Image 1 (spheres, rainbow, N blue to C red):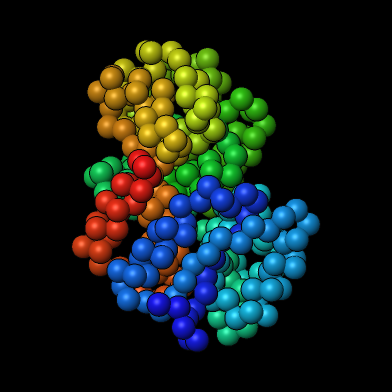
Image 2 (cartoon, rainbow, N blue to C red):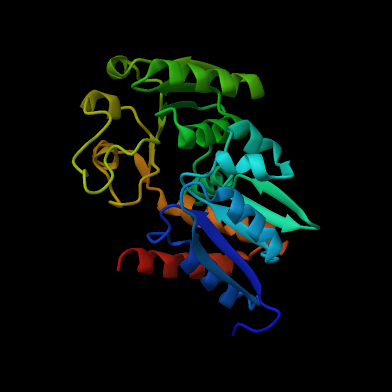
Length: 285
């Protein structure tokens, strides 16, 4: 029950009404008996600076950051974690000792979700579809986990070139940019990450890669979209025999990582499993 000593956390973005973050964090707080509450703050355009000042003034302990502020919010932070700076986006802020410290837990969430399904990226050849903010987090995560080779395909090649350069600047891993039409000739890219909005509801029939030959040698396919739970991309991969994963695991585990930063704790596996099952039930309502 909320009382005079309840710590307040929240989400800032525009929009925020669709977010599952309040459900996840309040569920975790209840499961762990933490005296905290998590709410969504709808921060409208041109109000980000006021919102950030308000966090400090109201002694709010931490927030998540969602679109469209993951990049712009970095200007209002006292410190930024090295990985978040490399990715170029912050999705979690810890307020402590009058300082605002930014982190990116998206890459952590994806890494943990992959481990849940026993996928090891070390020395593997990987394809990233897309070159936006989500692709940056995926690319840096893959390099951090020891990928042997990272290929990027994107509609705008210059953006793919920039992502390849970014990854190569921070990690000793080979990278390349591949035109979309050349993918059907490649059988060495055995793990693929789909990071674009293509295939998201209500345009669920769309797919970034229609060429069926591409899927024949694919071992693992990951789509960051979670609505629908199985995109056209994932269905093609599953029917060709690949292990598939949608974005729900990443969404849940990035929240776990943020919660652990805020509360300076490590959540036990049993609690995570119980809460994840409750989260899946909520997602399918």
